[in-house]
Amino acid sequence: MPQGRLLYAQSGGVTAVINATASAVLATARAHKVPALWAKNGILGALREEFHDTRKLKASEIKALAHTPGGAFGSCRFKLKSIEQDRGKYERLIEVFRAHDIRWFLYNGGNDSADTSLKLSMIASEVGYPLTCVGVPKTVDNDLVGTDCCPGFGSAAKYTAVSVAEAALDIAAMADTSTRVFVYEVMGRHAGWLAAAAGLAGQGEDAAPHLILFPERPYDEARFLARVDAVVKSVGYCVVVVSEGIRHADGRFVAEAGGKDDFGHTRLGGVGPLLAQRCKDVLGLKVHWTVPDYLQRSARHLASKTDLDQAMAVGKAAVELALAGKNGVLASIQRVSDAPYRWKVVPQPLADIANHEKTVPADFIREDGFGITAAARRYLAPLIRGEAPPPYGRDGLPHYPRPQLPLLPRLLPEWTG
Image 1 (spheres, rainbow, N blue to C red):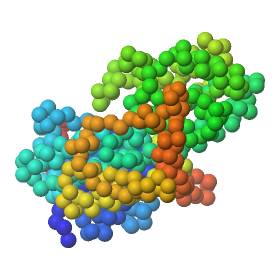
Image 2: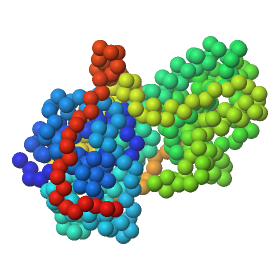
Image 3: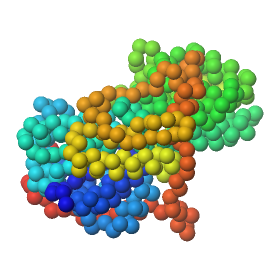
Image 4: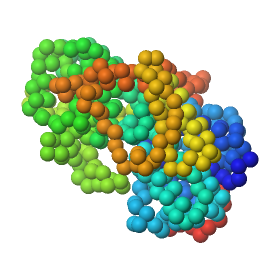
C-alpha cells in the first residue's frame, strides 16, 4: 500500500458534474488503499488546515456524489500569485502537507487551478518535499488548452442548447402580439464556447438562435441592430444569444461594470439586458431577456451523459497518474475521432496549460460572425449527447445528498492570512 495521503480540492465556479469527478477520485483512491482527504473550500481549506477525512464516507455516499451538482465540500475563488509574491502562502501549504503526510495533491478546476498546481509542484521540488501534483480539468467555459474539452462544459452546453430551443418555441408562439426580440446571455468572458453551443438549438436561416455574439468577434452595434431588424421583418421574431464578454473593436467590454474581481478580471454588468434595451430604444420592438447565470452550470437534471462519463474518467485517471508519480500534469481529454465519437484521458504538462486560454477557432464561427459552422457542430454535438438524470424522490424532486463530515483537528497554528 502506498505511504502517505492524497488531498483533493475543488476550485472556481462549480459545475453539474464536478462532484462526479470527486466521486471517481475517492472511489479510485479507496481501491488503491490510499487515504484521501478533502480540502474545505479549495486551496483556502489547505491554507487554513481544514480537511475532511473521506474514509468516514460509506461507499454508497461516494457513489451518490456523482448525481449531485455544486461543490460537495465547497470551492473558492482565490488566486495564488507568483512564488516570489506569495512565497509565505506556498511555504504554509508545504508545511500543512508535511504535517498531514500529504504526498499527492489533485486540484480540480480551470486555468488558475492549473497554475496553482504547477507552482505547488515547483515549490515542493525546491524545498525537497515529495509531492506529486496533478491538475483535474473543470470549467463550463471550456477554455483550458491541452484538453479537447472540459468536464462541466458538455452539460452546460446541453442546458444552453435545450433552453434556447424551448424559449424560441415560446417566442414564436407569442411574437404576433407580444415579444419580438429575446436575448439570452451566457457565460464566457473571453471564450464563446457556450454561445457557440446555443447554435446547436437549430439549423437553417430562419431557425433560432438567429444571432450569436462571440467575444472572439468585435461588437458593432449598428450592424447588430440592422440584422435584428432584418430577422424580425423576415421571420417575425429574433432570438439572440450573447456571451457576457463581448467587446467593442477597441477592446472595451460592452458591459463593463467597473472594478476588478478577486482574480483581477474586469467586472461585467450584464450585456443581455443592455442589448435588449437597445433593440427596444432604437428599433421600437418589444423585448425580453434572460441571464441563466448559475442555472446553466448547476443543471444536473439535464446533464450530458458524455460529460458525466468524462468527469468521472478524469477523476479516476488523475489518481492513477498521481500514484504513478506523474508530477505537474493535467488529466486531459484527447479526442480520437468525431464519428464515431471516441476519446481517452492522457497526461499533459501543466507548464503548457497554465495561464493559456482556448478560444473558439475562427473556422467555428460563420463568416458573417453571427452563427456557427459545420466544423463547430462536429466538435460540439458529441459533447451534449446522452442523458444522465439523477435519481428522483417521491416528492418529484431530484435526490441530491450532501455528505456531512467533521473537520480533522489542526496540527499547526491557525493561519491568519
